[in-house]
Amino acid sequence: RPCSSQVPRLIKAISRQLKARTVKTRIAAFHTLRQLTSSLPGCLATHAAALVPGVEKAFKDAASNNLRIEALSFMQLALSSHAPCVFQPHVAHLLPIVLTLVNDRYYKITAEALRVCTGFVKVLRPYPPAEDFAFRPLVPPLFSTVKGRLTAQDQDQEVKECAIVCMGTAICHLGDACSSELASTLAIILERLRNEITRVTAVKTFAALATASIDSGLTSPLAGGSGTVLQAVVAELASFLRKSNRPLRQASLSALDTIMSTHGKHLTQSDYDAVLDEMPSLVVEGDMHIAHLALALATTVVNTNAAAVVPKLAEKVQPKALALLQSALLQGQPLRSLLNYFGALVAHGTPPLDFVSLTTQLLALTSSPCALSKHSFEAISQAVAACCTAAPQPAQRAAMVAAFVRQLEPNEPAPKRVFALLCLGEIGAKNDLSSVDGLVDALMAAFAANSEEVKNAASFALGNIAAGNLPHYLPHLLREVNSSTHEYLMLYAIKDMVSSGEAQLGAYAEQMLPCLFAFSEREEEGVRNVAAECLGKLAAVAPAVVLPAIEARLDHPNPSARSVAVNAVRVLISEGGGAAASSASINKFLLALGDTDLKVRRGALLALNCVARNRPQAIRESLPQLLPMLY
Image 1 (spheres, rainbow, N blue to C red):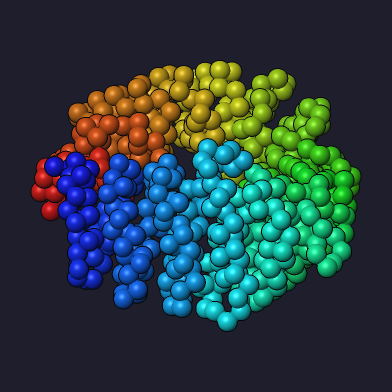
Image 2 (image 1 turned 135 degrees about the horizontal axis):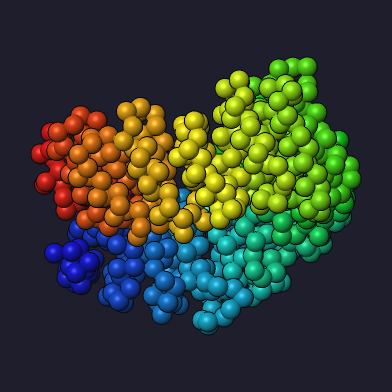
């Protein structure tokens, strides 16, 4: 029977064992409870009252530190995996006991008790500023106890870090109930920020305080100093950006991003300058994740106060951003962050980094005397498209598109035509270009070029432009597939269209199936793989139409068609659209493990591996049937 149906019996038996005399038995009972809570979060919702006496007894048992640690570990997990209302009736009884353990001499008990206090804070007031529970009488003893640990010097690092986290959580949730304590408490956390041992934890705590939905006191005057607590924190975080400690720089960049987005209006020009002065050394290809965080921060400060930061960005960060754009290592999240940065600059239009100046800088990179790689051309084209998409005036985008169309003339150099096609494709994927005169004719003429790079770029451009206006371009694209001498290039255009316009494709999936099914019967494996990718992505957005059609292909006499059907389901699962397919439907495709053709069996094996990793529950019931085929 399902484990969840056995929970009442388990709790009844465990609650008896929690009262046993043998310490080992009680420790084992708490360990079992932790395993149960981890496996079935929320399973104790109706049984908390039965367990509280055993938990209380363990907390008070000074004879065994291991028992108290196990009980505290269970309590921490239970608080985090259940709704606040489950333990609110018991918090007034349990919290004072836990606070006594915060002052225990054994550091492991103290650290675990502080973690439990952090959980209790979220139970007392889960959704500030709402007050759905009478928590105020419990706040003073909680604050005084945790603050005592926060100020203590001669204690283990784990205890110091747990005290900082607990106090930060308490201020975020309960700060308005102890406003008289905020100034002195923030001063202590600021002191911990300046301590090499505890500064990473303090950085994360100040980031959490910046997102608090109640007044956390960050904008209050700094005790014994000039400015506010917030300004002192920003100054410290800016200084951390030049440290060699990578986790510290990561945490500082994330914290600054949060602070700028939530409290940017409370900062002065000098505060912004202190941060921007440290950023050039971070926007480099040597550490792409740090570069991504730095660019995300740059985007945030532009959105927060463009007038104050754009001149400094133009001087300090822009040269580094343009150099990074040409890196062969730029891809994924760092590339997206760089594109967002360019888009934010253009959207705000603050000189000297407005649309005209920024696109001029980007286009100048393509005429650099240093040869650029294909990857660099693609990244620059995406940056140009980001600027065009964010352009405050549509006429600016239209002028840029018209200029690229003129560059498609046959007498232009091939690299220039390739770049123009890449830019048109990137722009068209996010903007409707159907009103541009002569665009389709210029694209089709590029298919007749002598250069393979120009042809491939034309295929990319056509597919992406079609994604920007499917009703206008899809019929033309399907006609060209059936009549053109460049059918393979048209197939790749369909692939690019499917990749760029997935969300809108549902209504057009049925029109595309005959064409893709025709390609699925080709002998060339590369063509079949592209067809399978398109079918899988289509199935993710239109499962009711596409899945039954693919399933019917499992009985096709051509083994190539059957292999494409199986591979399409693998693409569907790997793209995260597997929820659209039922377990029964998925298993029909996996039964192709018994097919007579080797490539079909190979596709089914890859699909089985994909399903086992991404949706293991879908094949659990079918394993007795699938495993004999596999082995």
